[in-house]
Length: 74
Image (cartoon, rainbow, N blue to C red):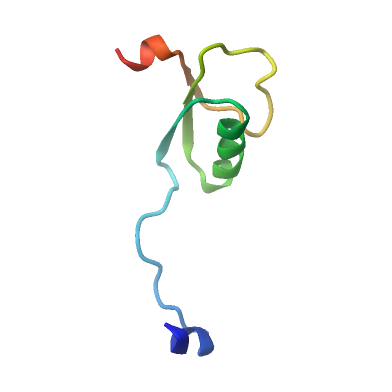
């Protein structure tokens, strides 16, 4: 790999893209919403759960779908 880096030839990316995938965040406090904010540019559908959803969950990290803990296990 060191030679590839020096030659600026890293080859094709391996693995799958996140584009169009769904990410479930279990626990949407500050860390969960920060994670959602960082995932948003990758074009993912974000679903999150939290014990109590308040109206101040606004902004860039806002999930596309919300679940309560009770509905998560159904």
